[in-house]
Length: 304
Image (cartoon, rainbow, N blue to C red; front, side, top):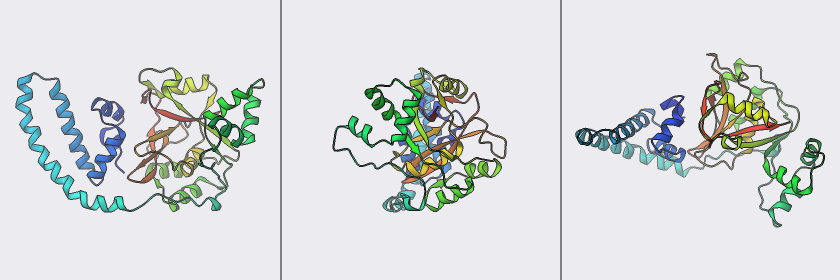
């Protein structure tokens, strides 16, 4: 799988924003090129040249336009070469099926409520969730329950897996694309299995008060200040089973402890879930303290 990070590097989000490339545009172009890394690199290079030209004097721009335009036919011919096989792939439905009966983990039904949404949230959410909220906020009012319940992204049941490798095998068996980095990390590190039910929250970086790009270190400190906890790596991996409604082009990161997922090169990672080319992925992103994130980025966390 060719991700922006693979082609552009650690600062890929800055580059995509500067070139006005959305996630949807990236994976649409990736599909046109049949997933070829070389073609994606050439595409980025051509956009970089056009971007540089906008900042140069008019005479320099005119002198470089023919060079850039001369590259376009080659790129277009490469697109036509892969359009046919790509169209055949798109006709196949590769959406993985999750055999709920074969796993102890369960996910709430997506059936739309027949009553108003606030009542549906209150009466269909797990009573254990309400008990947890009452424990955290003893004097909470009924409207407060609705507010807190609506924030919960997913609830994950206690794991039935004996170890993380069994979970990886099950993910691959059910058709999910597991990154080689995930497998390497799970082989290198002792990842404990969570034996209790947990409640996950989806928090946007801007909701923490950040209006500009900031570091992972500062984001984690703000999470802690607001009462949130990092997610165990095994919870992040098992969450893949229950996020089949994910939109194409989205990558959702999990705030796992910084040093809990170290690869064989001693590089720290955090897991992220994505969807592209009608497939569901479990990839990683570097979790260096100084790694840069944007206000629109989302993280999954737990709560005390």
